[in-house]
Image (cartoon, rainbow, N blue to C red):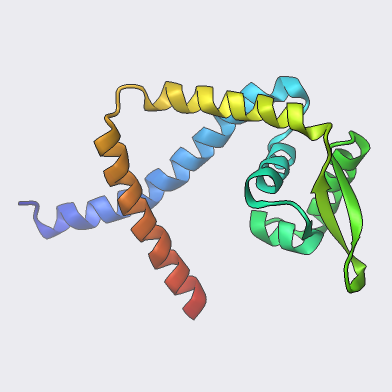
Length: 153
């Protein structure tokens, strides 16, 4: 049975590991997607819209991705110029715009998803499903703890 210092060391390492893994995952995926002309900020917007539904306001999308409004506007300007998204007037609020994926974005999203699947297969190779399930259960509890502390802060 580990002593108290081992437990606190594991708790400290968890936060560091999550941050490092998230960064490395994004860097690896970014390298694979760069040939499509998309930076991380651009492919994250497309994936967010595809996975969590489009038709959200620019402000909500910026909050979803934890970026500042002006940064989101520049990213959306580029994506709109490429024909991947379109802005529409929000119902009931003429000042707000909702963001929608276009048909031109679909093949790009397929490429992003294919590269993401390839990266997942590479980095998770050899890890049993039971281990992944246990890891996800722990990470889900960590996420719940973060949500509780964010709500109370």
